[in-house]
Image (cartoon, rainbow, N blue to C red; front, side, top):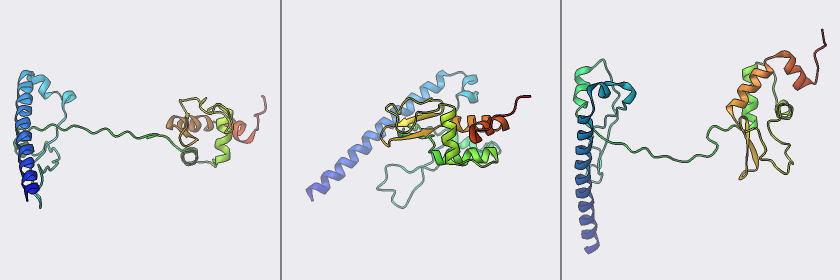
Length: 192
C-alpha cells in the first residue's frame, strides 16, 4: 500500500511540474508573438499552424493530455477563429533511417523498364553500371569506390545501393536508341 501511495504522489508531482512548465511556455510564446509585427505574423513563409484540441478519451484520468488534430479550413472563418487562441508546441522526433531513399538493383530494373517502356533486366543493369563506371565489380578490393551520385556501397550488408538519380540517368541515356543499342546490345551505329 505504501508503494501505491508513493506512485500516486509521484504522478501528482509530475503533473504539477508539467503544469508549471506549460504556463511558462505559454508566456514565452505569448511574449514572442507579441514582439512580432503583423506582417511577419500574417506571412505564410513563417507559418506553421497546428491546432491541438483537448479531447476526453476512455482513460482520461490516466492520460496526461489528449489531442485531436484539426484540418485548417479557410472557408469556415468563424470556426477557425476559435482555434487561433490555442497555442501548443510540438517537438518533432527525428528517427534515423539508413538508406532511406536507396534502391536495390531489382527496384532500379523495374523503374528503368517502366521509364523506358522497353525490356530492362538485371543483366541490362549490370551492363549499365559497367559501361558508365557507376561502381566497381562485385569482387573488388575497394567496393566503396562508387560514383556517389548514382550508387554507394553498404558495408553492413555488403551490397550496393542505388539512387533515384541513377534511375533518371539511365532512363535519359537509354532513351536514345543508339546509346541503348551500344550499352545493352553492344551494337555500334554505322557511320554516315
